[in-house]
Amino acid sequence: MSAFCFADLTPDTVLDALEELGLAIDSGLTALNSFENRVYQFRGELPGQPTIQRWVVKFYRPQRWSLQQLQEEHDFTRELLAADVPVVAPVSLHGQSVLPYAGGYFALFPSRGGRSLETDNEEQLAQLGRFLGRLHQVGKSKVFQHRPTFSVESHLHQSRQALQQCPQIPPHMQSAFFTALDQVIAEAANQYQPKELIRVHGDCHAGNLFIDQQGPFFVDLDDCRMGPAIQDLWMMLSGERSDQLLYLETMLEEYQQYCDFNPVELKLIEPLRAMRMIHYMAWLARRWDDPAFAMNFPWFATDKYWEQQALVLKEQLFQLRQPPLSLQPGF
Image (cartoon, rainbow, N blue to C red; front, side):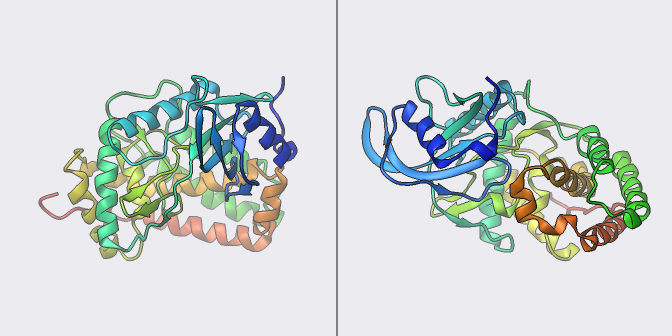
């Protein structure tokens, strides 16, 4: 059976999938903010556990990940949980956590509430540093066999191919945009030469982090892959260069209690920023046929957006040509 279309993923379809597993649903479905997958919260009981609690069900976008890649994500999450790293692990039902339905896959997670992490709060950044140090300690213990890797090919060259076919880029902007894009790709590709790749979260930014009384935690590792350790640190750095250095040293002081950090990786921050920037534009281009994207990102099809992106790329080229951050003696 072919994988279901997200447009056909109605609340009734979701409820049917849950009830087939033997869950007793005690509420309606509340859609949670997610564009790549379809995610809902509900209250119910698991088979053999007569306690009503909140759950989150996530239906994975078809054709994005293979069954082996999804299983590696779940296995990594359980490794982290076993090492007391605060993540929310998927539930295993009938001996499996990647659950098939109608040609696609979904997963069930306990619902855990929290507030957003404050990236300018030194105490919270210190907690995050400890968390990431422990995460990377586990991440170094083995490698992914099926999950992808942060690479020049995937994030720069393939992204450029997607943008080359993007009809939303206005004709009068093609020359200026692609000239700036190609300059950034060339510079970033030259600079991105990681010395060590480990299993990383992959998308560690404030919007994907929550914090409660126990500290920071992730609800899932949907974008985990092989990459340099700095990938999970650099998106927490904002403001002026002095501010970025302060935030980085705050995290590393705690991080290095659990995992060594190679300061050579600081040279990768701006190439990784460029890779993320270009990959994000290509992601929107690839997903534009999904009605949810045109509805939620209408500015992607405007002249103003592409004019701004050409300027942003020029600014990123300038940053790529600046000296990298440098830690104070003792780090």
